[in-house]
Image 1 (cartoon, rainbow, N blue to C red):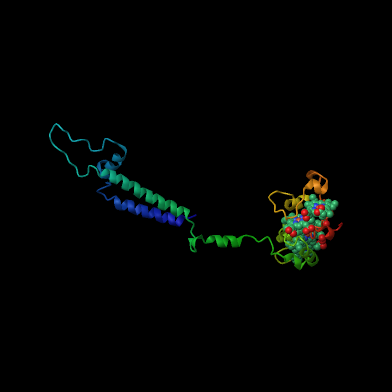
Image 2: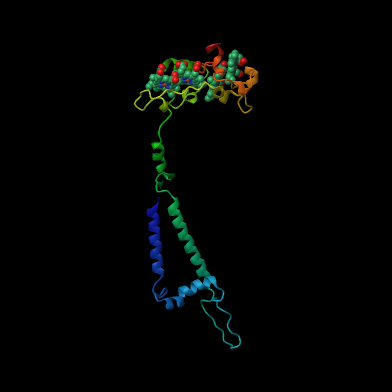
Length: 229
Ligand code: HEC
Ligand code: HEC
Ligand code: HEC
Ligand code: HEC
C-alpha cells in the first residue's frame, strides 16, 4: 500500500551499499574478494580465530597493530547502521500516507468517515410524516427516548428521495422495555424501573409479546396515557 516510500528507501540503501563497496573493498574477482577487508570484517564478526592473537613471546618481538581493538567499534557501527535502516524501512511501511497533514493525525480518516453510509436521521425527523405520534411522544415521559431507539434507522424505512421504501419494524417484545426498565442496582434510584415478578406476577420467560404495552402505550407510557390505563 505504501510502495512509493519503500522503493525510495530501498534505492537509497542500494546507493549506500554501492558507495561503501568500492572495488578496493569489494573486488569482483572471487579469489580477491575472499581476501578483501570486507570479507575479513564479516569473518571477524563470526569467528574468534580472526581476532589478533597474542604476540609470540619467544621471539622477543612486540607486534603492535593500531587496528587491534577497533574491530569492536566496527561491529557497533555496523549494528547501528543496520538498525537505523531497518527502522527507516519499517517506519516507511507503517506510517500512513496522510499522517501529519493536520498534525498528529491520519488525515484520510476524515474522508473515510464522510464516505460511511448515513443510516440514522436527526432527532425529530419522523415528525414530518408522523406528526400526531411525534406530538404525543414529545409530551410524554418517553420524550428523551428517540423513535429510532425502539424502531429502526430511518434509511430502512424512507429512501434518499423521501419516498416510502419499506415498512418500519415494530418491536412489541417485553424485552425492549426491560432493556431500559429492568431493576438493576447500578441504575439511578430515581429512574423508573421494575422488579419483573413483583410488577407483573409472572416470571420473565412467561412474558408474552406485547405484554407491557397492554397497559403502557410506548409513545406515552404513563399508565393513564396508555390504551388501557
Ligand atoms: C417521508 C415520510 C416519512 C418519514 C420521514 C417517516 N415515515 Fe414512517 N411511515 C411513512 C409512511 C408513508 C408509512 C406507511 C403508512 C401506512 O402504511 O399506513 C409509515 C409507516 C410507519 C410505521 C408503521 C409501520 C407498520 O408496519 O405499520 C412506523 C412504525 C413508522 N412509520 C415509524 C417511523 C419512524 C420511527 C420514523 C422516523 C425515524 C418515520 N417513520 C419517518 C412515512 C414516513
Ligand atoms: C419506547 C419505544 C418506542 C418509541 C420511543 C417510539 N415507538 Fe413507535 N411504537 C412502539 C411500539 C411498541 C409500537 C407498537 C404499538 C402497538 O402495537 O400498540 C409502536 C408503533 C408505532 C407506529 C404504528 C402504530 C401507530 O401507533 O400508529 C408508528 C407509526 C410509530 N410507532 C412511530 C413512532 C414515532 C414517529 C416515534 C417517535 C416520535 C416512535 N414511534 C417512538 C415503540 C416505540
Ligand atoms: C431506550 C430506553 C427505554 C426503552 C426501550 C423504554 N423506555 Fe420507558 N422510559 C425511558 C426513559 C428515559 C423514561 C423517563 C425516565 C424519567 O422520567 O426519568 C421512561 C419512562 C417510562 C415510564 C414511566 C412513566 C411515568 O410514570 O413517569 C414507563 C411506565 C415506561 N417508561 C414504560 C416503558 C415501556 C412499557 C417500554 C416498552 C414499550 C419502555 N418504557 C421502553 C427509557 C426507555
Ligand atoms: C396490568 C397492567 C400493567 C402491565 C401489564 C405492566 N404494567 Fe407497568 N405499570 C402499571 C401501573 C398501573 C403502573 C403505575 C403504578 C406502579 O408504579 O405500580 C406501572 C408502572 C410502571 C413503571 C414505572 C415504575 C416507577 O417506579 O415509576 C415502569 C417502568 C413499568 N410500569 C414498566 C413496565 C414493564 C417493562 C412492563 C412489562 C414487563 C409493564 N410495566 C407491564 C401497569 C402495568
